[in-house]
Length: 245
Image (cartoon, rainbow, N blue to C red):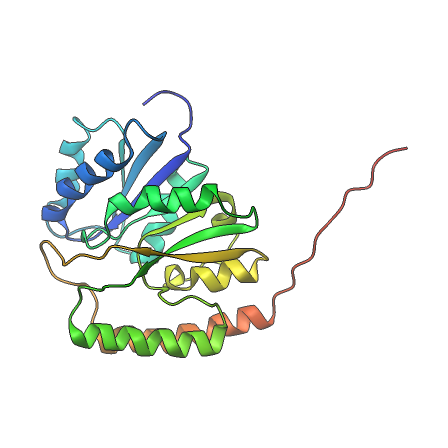
């Protein structure tokens, strides 16, 4: 890469995804190289397999790829946030590391951004044809319904991993574990808007899911109360600077 900062950074958190890394990186490159200025930032959350070594080896053949590693395992939200902090792009695209998000959808999100109003700072993927198990789809449907009734975030699929957002706006949001599931509500709380964009969804290529429905639901209920409290206590106002006469 050149010394200039790219317009886009693609942030991918991973934990034990060694067989999904190379195919996903190749797909990101195919979707963006020659079309946009970009970098890829992988965050290894102290994988127990050789994901980190796969990433280091891949850096030799993919100049856009950068790799950071957590000192201790810290979870997906922290990995996303640290990836964004390490990124140099003005806009961030995120993908889950399991390969279920399709990198070919990133240009679709970019095109939506290019034609959107300036107050829209988040373009969230919407998995209209999910490839998960039936139990996982039903759990997600119920969770989305409960979340929407609490937060009024007008988002049909907040759990989709593929998103595009302005880096500066993200870095100004309150940070907490699992915050990546509440970005539409948090962006709205900050005084901006988000839109949902239909995207492709694929079956997991390799490995196993890191979540179970019961654990996700329990954590989600506690988080909902916290996010609702944040929204209730928020106050957004514009400012103007006084000019000298």
